[in-house]
Image (cartoon, rainbow, N blue to C red; front, side, top):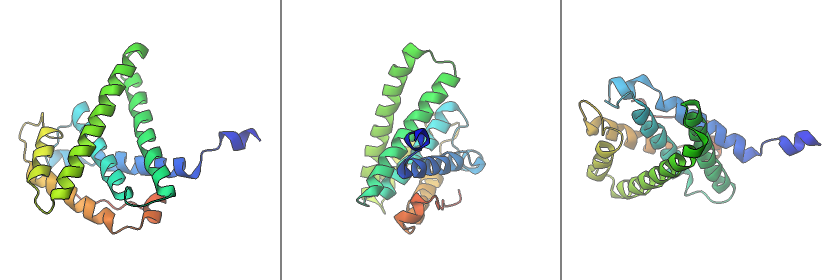
Length: 175
C-alpha cells in the first residue's frame, strides 16, 4: 500500500526522462568548444534552460496528458536547480530568493524564445536572444552557430510524435 503511495506517476517519470535528456544534451562538449558557450555555471544554466524550453515548446501544442508531462518537466527542472544550489552551499534562507530569480529567468527566456520562434525563419531575434543569454559572458560570442543549432533541434523535435518524446526518445540535432 505504501509503495503505491510513494510510486511516481507516469507523467513524473516521463518528465524525469526528458529532464535527463535535456541535461545530458546541455553537457555536450561541442556546445562549449565549437559553438562558444562559456563553460561556467551561468553558461551551463543557460544551455540547460534552453534545452528544457525546447522540450516545453515541442510539447505545448499537444493537449491532454502531455500538459501534465510539460508541467512535471518544469517541476523537475526547478527541483534539480534547487538541489544544485544547495550542493553549491547556498544556505536555506537564500535558496528561496535565488529560486525566484531563476524561475523569473526561465519564464523570461521562455517568452523571448516564443517570440523568436514565431519570427522564424528570420533568425535575428533568436540570435539576439542567444547573444544576450547563453553567450553573454563568452570570450568570443558568435550567435549564428548556436542559433542554427537551436533551429535544427526545434525542427528535429517537431518530427517526433509526442508519445515517443514522452517515452524518452528525444533526438537532438548534433551541435
